[in-house]
Image (cartoon, rainbow over all chains, first blue to last red; front, side, top):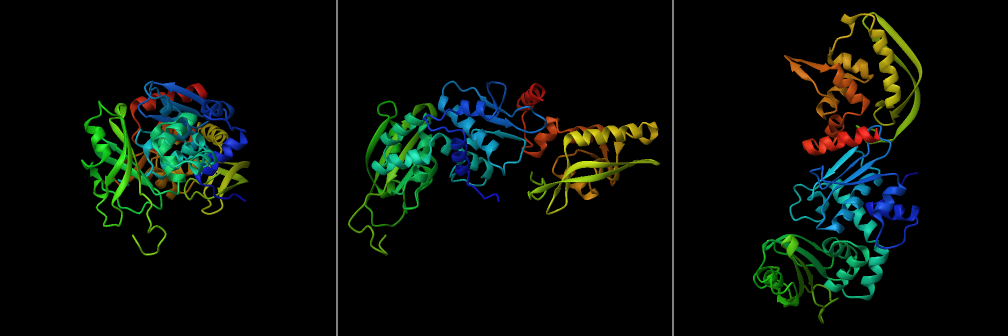
Length: 270
Length: 148
């Protein structure tokens, strides 16, 4: 009897079936082993696409050439492999835009595409297996350095690595992605119980400082008042913020951590 | 295999196919098909469809007048061996294209055959994202020719 598997289950099964344990995950080898043609091309408008229907001898994955950013191509291939491996993805063609490849926990969910989110979950697990990431975050507090180390081992982007870490972490953290001085999206762990503000970055935040003075400092850590990120009325006085400015995306990646205090674990205190 | 309408499992069966054109009819036994356990939708493999179409086309060759280039809903349903409702559903979700004259739909037989052959990238794309760019369409057409 067929049992339902979440997208990450299909990624784990694929790695297991092909006996792949090394990092970074060899996505092109996976294509070869599963008889999928992989093209890097300038002939498409989409960021990536897969054609797997009709009477094709073998499916074709096409990735738009983007020499500036190689790890993005690896994520695109892994994403298209998700459309190939997840049984409920029945369409014969999936054309994926840059937005589709960033469909995780968007603030604006009007354009929410379930298949694209599933393919992204698949890709994240294929490139950054949870067994490996969990082992790292079990022994280290989540920080930009930890995320950078994982991204280097897995050959993935900092953004996708930060999201995978946040989805597996039980600490009180939130990952915030800001572009051009405004919050674009965020992902919180279940224990991060603050409502985060959207829109323009507060001038009190480290992320805003980095954005305004990007040419001097690209990375900074510090304590910021709660109001810099949230209007919630809570007992915490400050948040730990670590931000990194990524000039090629005109964006800032931020890790927010709620510090532990003597009231932690006491029922009814927020 | 999953049903395209209700996404339930389909079972492989052997069935009999009846086709008629004008005054003529033909029965083909032993056709392999997939039947949906839920909604009874019947799907033939592209090879079987091609064979049925070749036989039906040969039968229709008996009279040029009996082989129109434009078909109505009933004729498309007979050609594809599906119900009239399925033809309307296929029209609605973009798997088939047609023109409306007054209250009547007319289908180009060539388009219907191409859609069933499954090699037409436009018809395939129509089942998914309908906003396919010309550039993507050209690329898909190219790889389908190379890998087809």
